[in-house]
Length: 585
Image 1 (cartoon, one colour):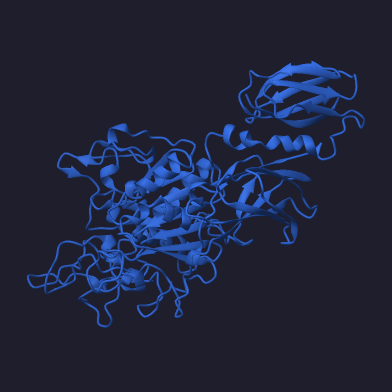
Image 2 (cartoon, helix red, strand yellow):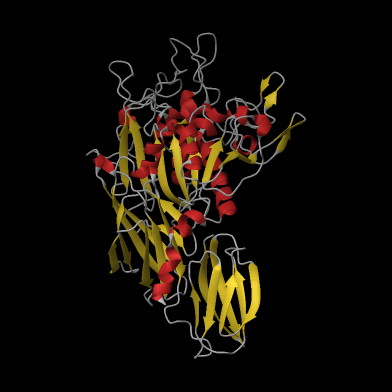
């Protein structure tokens, strides 16, 4: 039986049967200040076209729906469903990634790729006769963005059926992610999480930030400069991203960025009058209709380089900070052209990235807006966790891809950890297609992290049979490889399915065999008894594609069936057995 089952795992399982690849979790890309779904352009196209992860699905959300930049009320500004504005229908929510508004398709397709869009010019119906509606939607308050990300994550979970998502944020998009993850109310309840009652209610498996001003950025104009009033840079987003204001009107003390480090909104309110200082469009940082609130900063203090410990980042997520030092920036400035290098990540007094032990960093030499368009860097940042506690979830009969990539400081050894749900099966077949992926070892562990099996990979397609311990219906799977300059371009593909290692006795004395398997069409099914038996064949969608009655040895021509994995079911009286059949024409 084991010998027959080993034939079920040829290249056709991975490359011929499946036309679209899947990651363990869908990815949501979040753009930055004044950006859109196009921010990650070439990276998304690489994942779509080279790695075959499906079409790019976009979710449009307006963050200034009342079209009034003087106010910042959450309930009036944030909309994600279609609505009518000035007799014009505004189309929001789901659409496919396209380059022209006229070509929008307002639906999603089966995919792992999702992009959030706040840019009003990219939203159908937002183009008014005298200009765009919803000005500065993609330059709105970070409080609004964190709330909107909740809607996006829920939509993706509902659509895909996934347990979690991977979040990739560029520039301010990383702060949007942090706002979603960190913000709590006065009772320490997470206000943006999908389920604030559980420790993983954020539903996030991985976070990658790219060029994010984690500690703020003052490269945009500061309208609080009373000596040189500047009408530029007065958006809500710029107000939130500044780590230091030039002039406080109503408050004394250190002029710290209020969203970044905390303070009272009224401190940066304009003084007014002919000689008054210029200010922002509004100073309602928490978007509740009041401009006199005390704001809890997302970070600890201007003297610290870490997040606010009273509103911490969750420690059951793996983080990567992608940073950059662009050589083209002015002399004396070190950073990516928009954010200083010492503000692109979070770290402790010893320069260790935080949260400690679950965070790494990547350093590039690209300009701020070029980094998110570099597929290698983003895929490296998405590297699968190497710990049991953060293992990515796998399910039987689902193909998944992963990557062997360099680790922090250029270390080539990469260990990717998964947790496989085996249901009530006593044994599974685990298939690895690792052509040019550089995977060299596979290991299996029980739920107590005890090694069950370790195996060197010596062939392109490898099948391992694993007995599932009786103590649980899950096992850990670790894939180990050594990264090269091209391994990230060749993702490995894994697939597992339940097997029967007891020959499936029928009525305790009848057995069945199927050969050849895989088959190009002609298949012999042999029973050990002359008793009449009903034969049914089902495809991968559980649809019956063939049915007949057989007795002892029968030969069939199944060349009419498309390439794929089929379930063969044999019924006698009130009992049945099932077997797998691979068709390769």
